[in-house]
Image (cartoon, rainbow, N blue to C red; front, side, top):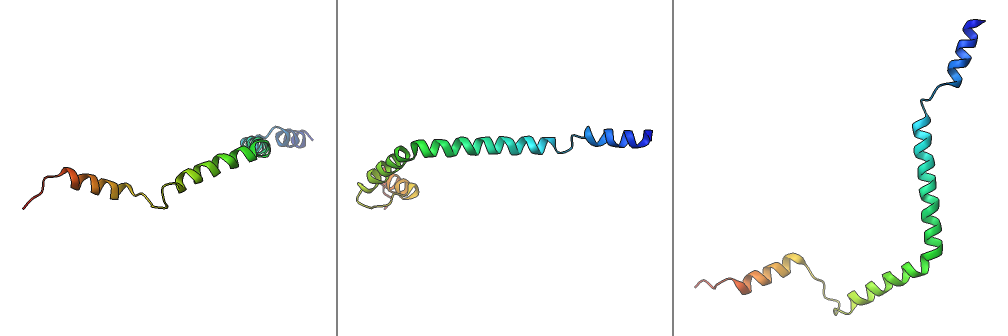
Amino acid sequence: MLNLYFKLRSLTSRQEGQGMVEYALILVLVSIVVIVILLTMGNQIKNVFSNVVAALAVGGGRSWSPSLQWRRSTRSNSPEVT
């Protein structure tokens, strides 16, 4: 009888999955906060991205490459070899 008592007591005091449950609760809380923020500020965020896209489109549709820009600047600054 005492053995059964100790087995039942050990089942109630186990904490093996506690860390995983805590991480899951934090993940759920963060997800809820993100959803609430997106629902309340969705239109403002959409306007910001629309403004960025419009500002990038003003450049005439040309794509800019850092490596291409670097090659152009080094050619113009380097002395010509004949």
